[in-house]
Amino acid sequence: MTSTDDESSFEDPGEALRLIEREQANTMRHVTPDPRLMYWPWGLTWLISFGLSFLRFGPDGKTFVDMPDWLPLLALTGLLIAAGIFTGIVGARASRHISGPSSRQGAAYGISWSAGFTSLAIIFGRVGEHVPDEMLGLLWGGGMVALVGVLYMAGSAIWDVRDMFVLGAWISVVNVIGVLWGPGWHALVLAVAGGGGLLAAGLIGWMRRR
Amino acid sequence: MSTDLPELDPVIHAQARLRVVAALSQLPGGDRITFPRLQEILRMTAGNLSVHLRKLEEAGYVEVTKTHRGRTPATLVHLTQRGRFAFEEYVSALRTLIDPGEEPS
Image (cartoon, rainbow over all chains, first blue to last red):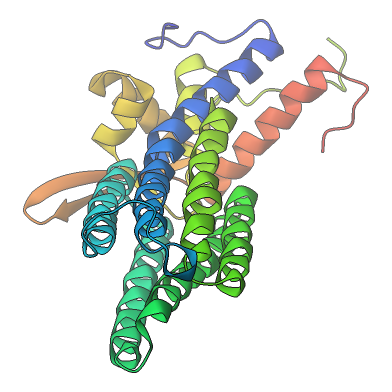
């Protein structure tokens, strides 16, 4: 670490530029959350729970792996809650002790997620009573994932992060493909392409800021 | 030194203050950061950071406000418009010094 307790300046302007770059990168690492910690919990959640759903409720009503029929949904609910709490804490830690427009943006964005999921849960819960069992997975999975895709794209509009837009667009496209493909296949697409996309987003984001 | 080379702002052209300004420039305009958090990011002692913040404040480059968060007093720091502009000028002056042929943007 360079000495900081004096008025020392630089002989070489290049040295000053390098110091600026180092300090700016260091600050960004402190005030923005690690992309791995923000995306990987969601990626694993999708991979595991949609994977279980595909294995239990496969295409054309096939069961690839015999397990209790409540297990995939329980895994999804439990993992979603855990990922939500975890990423909430990581995000809040990065922006702690900073106030101003960016924390209001973050709060508005966070509330948008909760509001969207709550609305859809109420709508699907109500409509789901009249939907055949084999289509329930498409309704809930397809609807919720459509919201996730749109919110990631909207997030890129707030923070001007292109990768986030690409992720949101990818999720939106694979979700629609899965829905059109049909029950069972939808879960497989979300587990592999959706979960994989989230894992890749965390890795790419982390590599970019190193 | 020929006269068309830019002068470097002496307020910013010191290691410690350059680090402070570079770090603050990464926060979105209008955001304020608490003194201890800034200290943690910069890895400076409180006394050292205070001294340099005071000099930056005298130049109008940062604004230091005292407030309360609940019952604990908090000191908030932010880079002013003027400070942000001075930092941009400083960076473009550095680039001109490195490559005098290039016009400062």
